[in-house]
Amino acid sequence: MKRILDPLDERIIAELRLNARAAHAELAAKVNLSRNAVRQRIERLERDGAIQGYTVRTGEGLAGASQINAVIFVYRHDRMRGAEVLQALRAIPEVIQCDVMSGEFDLMLRVGAASPERVHKVWNQISALPGVENTVTSFVLSSVV
Image (cartoon, rainbow, N blue to C red):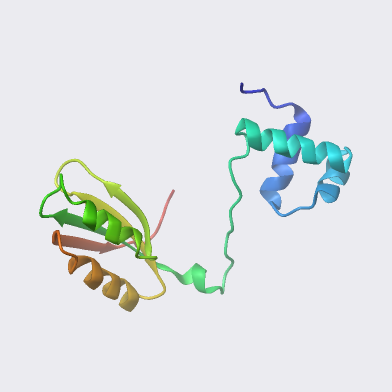
């Protein structure tokens, strides 16, 4: 059952958006509750789906911040029985996302790597997979959303 968030829940979520690693005691002081009450509310918010996870954002100057992204469209020899291609793609750590597509392309991959040379090596690895007929690769210039 989804609950309506009260103002205290909204304040806790707002504080967690600013710092997801904030200690319960720190949050308690900011929202004027006890540490235990904050912990219970956070657990309920997670259980109810209002908080669905925590993430890490890398800052300027870290290696992850300079990641090169590319999109690779993959044509398989047999799009209905190409499960071995999907299994092989799961083993490539640079493949961030793999979507099975309708229409012209079979698969759309989002690849993230430290350099264009690494993207090229990943592309070579993917294009050499048995079951891959052809690929089209584009580098991401910027991400809007």
